[in-house]
Image 1 (cartoon, rainbow, N blue to C red):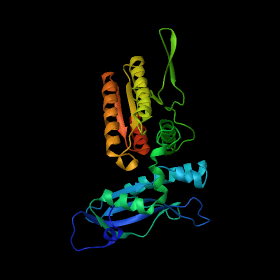
Image 2: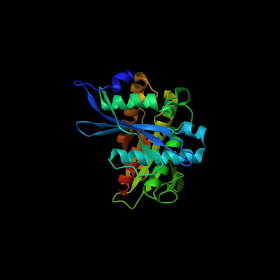
Image 3: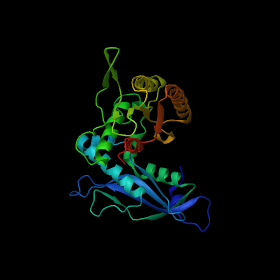
Image 4: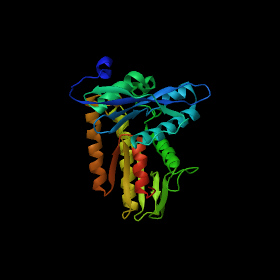
Length: 292
């Protein structure tokens, strides 16, 4: 971690990057004036490129408030992140605002936002809790990833309820005179080529738990390609990175596990798409179903 004084002190010459940084602040109850630091944004002085890191786990907000407000916060943070990355000004008097820009320099844009995020966003400490990453309750467990993606799809499409292509229960079809259930969450037949997709997460510390969900996803794809051989069949997988509470050895093992599943899925003429966030996964699904 870089010394804060080094980060924030201008110099005439340096190697690396420099520019302006801002805190991203959230107010769930504007009447009280309470603001929570939920992220950091950095704008490169030379290129103008914007790099952000915003809160991806609202578990701490569930403790401070309740599930409904935490879900509202997740939606607001997602919308703010998208706007900031696109260079769109945040609305005045909105629940999310930016602090005044201040100078910063460092080895890279990513190292700057990561350092400032660690120092200035206490809620972010809940994003890396290794002791809870093998339960089905943590925010990036498969069950919760599916819930988050469904919510993001609904909100991006500005509709009430789940999209028409979302399946909350396994799809059931008949094979050999018997009903067969396939655990897919996406079934879109209005596109040029019908699409079936299953959502899974590799966000587990132990190989046992991780492979259990990877295997379930691969099984769903194998069944889908057998039942719907002419359709597109995609496994959408969430994968953690080093900054998410995993060390290099664990990340290497996760990558190896994913490579094995990728080979297996592709052997059955399905495909595997890997993402670092639920937001990116939702955007890909929207593209795949022709919604954007």
